[in-house]
Length: 257
Length: 253
Ligand SMILES: Nc1ncnc2c1ncn2[C@@H]1O[C@H](COP(=O)(O)OP(=O)(O)O)[C@@H](O)[C@H]1O
Ligand SMILES: [Mg+2]
Image (cartoon, rainbow over all chains, first blue to last red; front, side, top):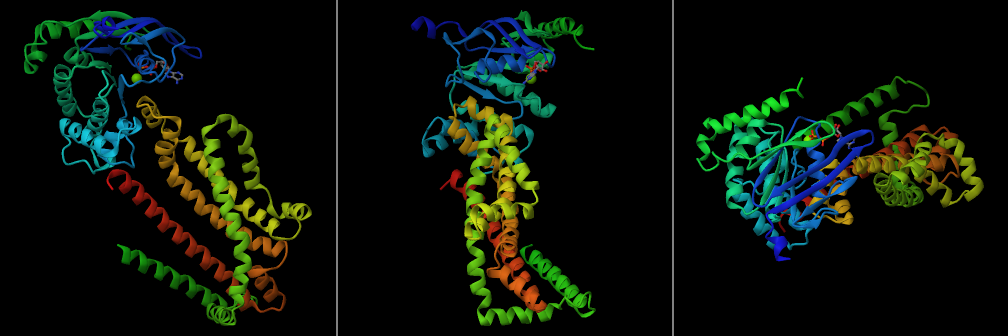
């Protein structure tokens, strides 16, 4: 029991296969996600990143193979995981505070308690004062902050993020990336982060799993080490950062027409 | 804003009634009375009380039929929208019902259920139910996949996902179906009185036509349209109130 909860792997994927009819989305994919770290799934569109994340989330069954979260086999969604959606997946008829508290609402937390928790995370993601606004009144970036606050407020150990920043503008995206680094540092959580941006993956990740199509498998695992502690501002100029970006581009080049 | 829509409504009414008056005076047909003649006839029907006793009759199949259609229509629609099998099994019935020539079905209904209230309620339901069912099922089926997945990933039960995600998301279209269904129900109620047994407002219409009292006939038709419009306006109010209630009640109460 103790051994499990202190294990260094928060999520383990073992020999997972997944087909959609004729399309082989994942073939014999195995991958470990170290606890407390951010692992990116990086790869071209259609290589199965979303599929893998949904299988880990328990939203989609694998054809065969096994996914374990904290040593327990995944059979469906669980309280140990929270999802941040690419298209935000907010309830358009609900205010910001209800959207943020919705995960807790579904877990049966009482109204005043869940709203107090939601308030805290709304402030944390910088949406103070927007509690009673509705999603259509917010920008894309703000909507994703709502989605992030909702995922944080259920206090799951594992955060699954499917291209969370792809629908926000470039400036907001950079700010998000910095915020994400702080989040990884200060929240004791494991982050699974899907992206198709090489720079983004190298910038935010402790570990990058390079997925190649198709059927998708992990072709390479890269662990940037040198620049993580040098401070957020200098990362993009760091030589190791630039080397890794180049190396990944070389691997991916053949798959991009 | 509110005042403007009100004055627009008044303006368009004046235009329509004015055109009616002019058309009646030309006259378009000897059987087409002017607006003022019709209103005078309506006034007579009202002070005589004829119109009220007529509506007591007409509203019976209408209210019962609309209530049945709303209740079962929304229920069935949700079920159809949620279950592919049930959809395959039941939807064609309503699609056929919607396009079936009602006049051809009425003799059949009379044969089975006689000429009483039951047959009339059936006619109202045949008119009202399909559009309610089809709108509801379509709205339920078209709920965004992503917010349903969101509900699942945050551990919503099936019931919670239906009640807190699918229903609120579908309700605007369900209300559209309800409004269309009720309009169709009004038509069904009058049709049943014209085709099955002349009672209520249908009786006023067919009786005044048989004695060539066209102003009364048009007065009765006018009154039913007026009632339908009034009713739909009330429904719209209710709808707005419910949505405000949903939003308010769930945010802070
Ligand atoms: N529901 C589905 N039905 C059929 N094919 C699908 C479905 N979802 C994804 N696919 C296919 O599986 C492959 C992987 O998809 P996905 O996991 O969404 O990729 P990514 O997120 O990396 O862009 C793609 O080729 C896609 O077309
Ligand atoms: Mg994807």
